[in-house]
Image 1 (tube, rainbow, N blue to C red):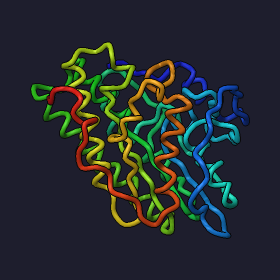
Image 2: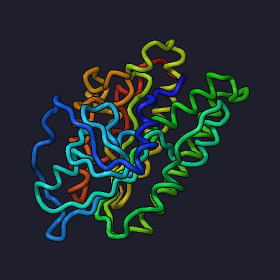
Image 3: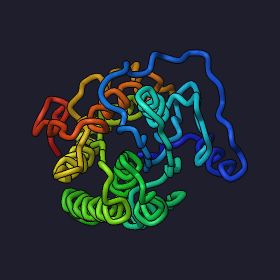
Length: 296
């Protein structure tokens, strides 16, 4: 279960402090159609946390972290443009390609010699803007891969299932800590989090054995279920696990891991209603996407 973050992601991180522009692409799909509210006369202050998704890695227009990217084709940039259709928007994109959720996962990765360019809990969410009206968080794929790599390296002890369950519980505790920190710093913000897709069914994982896919399915589905449990009050959960379109081949870039333009447009389409509506439906309790491979 090797890391699938491409070399160009590391280059993006290195150049982030000096670059202030984004690349151009010619194949740009239509962004989500207008609809719903935009945040009122005071405008929207949008803070985004995540990993390579926040930079649109894999899309036709990738962005440098921490830099304006008005033509970006990642889901964060698509949402920014859609929100602007109904009023002013200020975006604070704190995501860093390759990041994981917390120091706990960083420590897991070190068991197999992996390092990460930071985490959301200590390197991103402390920089929540107090005036934020909406905050999005997407975490988990890099984390799930790290847990899977430890199992593949036979460093998970004599009970891999127990190891998965323990790591996912710790991960969920850290996710809740991220949300508490956001709420403390931006008490008026609507928080929108995305659960995980079934990574075992993504193209990058296709060469793996059925047994390995069952292991990854257990990790991803368990993480997704824990994200679903975070839904409460002004915290909405966007259900990408149970939308079959997320796993269609056209939703992925050439590396089979990062979304394509279509994949990012789909993420934006699914997230937008949760960002602008006072209430958002709960994610599905169960669906076929959770059971694509034999249980592990």
